[in-house]
Image (cartoon, rainbow, N blue to C red; front, side):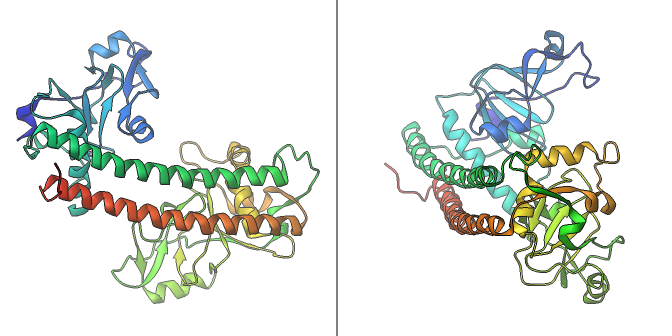
Length: 389
């Protein structure tokens, strides 16, 4: 069955100009991709809204309609929990023939469709989808009873994945609460810790290369701010490599070692930090600062949690240079104030971090296994290989 034969496929639209008070800021919800990422299957848009005039220039959809992202996170489906408008980054499915296909079954299939196309995509092939491509999606024709059985099986697997992700988030929250319990509010400093400048508790503060070396197919790993998230360095999301010759030149000045902190000082994610937990050498761009702590005064786990603390980040970013592009200079980083509790207390906190990170790694491994199982079940279900009643 072609999706276009089962429903009306309509492209979203947006009022122009963007932000015009005649069209934006009213009481009519407008779906955004962040709403879908947050809510999952059933979405209640809360991020943006339109006036009645704005809705006339957009694409109103009804509660229960299936919507598919065609840009941002192309192929990602959701079901509207309320009446809402969609912009041109989505297509909506109207008048779905539910005598042929259940919405929940369609949602599961579209997730599978997205998974398969992302896995097979090369370069920009799956960066955006057109309305015609959506209409031509081929959906297996099976009985309603079998659709119900498939939905039950896949939903159980999806629920396990959601629960595991929630467990990982809870561990992150545990670390944040442990930090506050042990050290107090980092700005109010009600526990009266000594305050020093970052340059006084680090043996070295520098940044990566200020020139962009040529990227090669095989060589030494090379990272930018895009590879660093809060408390995580992801070399493999988009692996880059440079020649050994270029690496040696960069490494003379900026030599990240295991236990050092990488701190984003330039770009949209300025202010996030992560500990280098790897033994191998790599090079980095100047959008990242390298902090080597004086371990007699400061524990790297404490500094990392300090820098990633929301209160601290807000205070630091208020004083940032630049307008639309956020940027911290090495001079600014050197002068950042930091509370310095006794090293013994910092070390106790580091022990808590180690235990939580060990458990988190186990959960992450379990999550990968569950996601693989979900992929196998989906593939079997939609290829007719899954044994169902």
